[in-house]
Image (cartoon, rainbow, N blue to C red):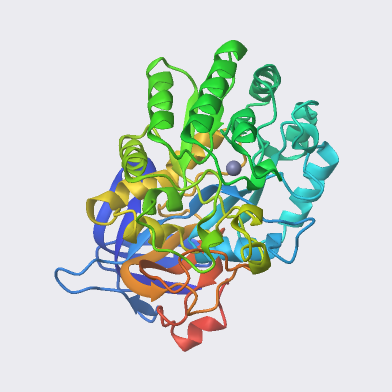
Length: 449
Ligand SMILES: [Zn+2]
């Protein structure tokens, strides 16, 4: 690769950099020059200059997703590490944290090591979260130090929240000893069980009141207070009450961070368009009302919520058709995350630098400096780990072939704005939208060089 991207807006949230009209020269996987106008003889120029009043294409550091279910091992028909990584790249993510709730669960140093070796050949960096408790059962803690030594960058029982506060407290302490955060799926299982009149698995129960989340957020923050050390990260907040609880804990100086998904930012009930099948909108925690959604947006804006994380949850469509109560919860979200935020979340315009912070430096802060994910940066000399996107380009979800093996999104057929054109991971091309980013023919052969 040796080319100049002409006329892009360069945004690097880690240092507050936001420069319009830049030329960026990429050579052999590195950023070798970046300024207003570069003429470098025969070096091919990809001219992305937009006219007055038009939104420029944006070059940003690669996005970091703190929350993805890549389904391997155990459900490779829904997703594999390789396909999930390609979907991540198509969404602009160069780092993705894979959850532990595979089959078998990633709950021992051996399984962490296996997960890390599966990730080794992925097109983006796939990081591994280990479970907090064996089998996500909430009774026996995993070997925290051993799992960290084997490569786990975080601990999470996501999908379940069976661990009692005492176990979570001890897990926070042990994770602190190895500089790892503990990620919690905050839904109180006792409250959900009490509402689960249909019977069946708790994870599939549709009646998940907002109080179940507030109770679990409160309990997790209490466990952190009891631990006296450690870092707690709350996954996929969905209610205004949760945002308030996190805000108060932060004001008290507690080491609590939080994430929100694109679907909770961009969709709310009953406004979300009905889907066929209806279970495409089924997700844990559920989509809430407009007031909750506005509180999430405000929390993201003012930094109480540190990260946008996808909770990419691929499922085969036969798990989404039929009885709503029996359907699998979850939305495949890696490829639509950016466009969902820009289009349905209303985060274009002056939102863009904030949104990019919550997709890059924010999630990196959550992982902490001890995590191996080096923060991608846009500066001369740096290996290119970055995303180029056109915030104004429109596309229809599902019209072009996606990279994920699953298509369970309520956005099928929906026209969104914001298209990822190119994702470079560690100097190599991880994703290239050849249709929307014409590439000089003589460059193709040297892609990745
Ligand atoms: Zn979850």
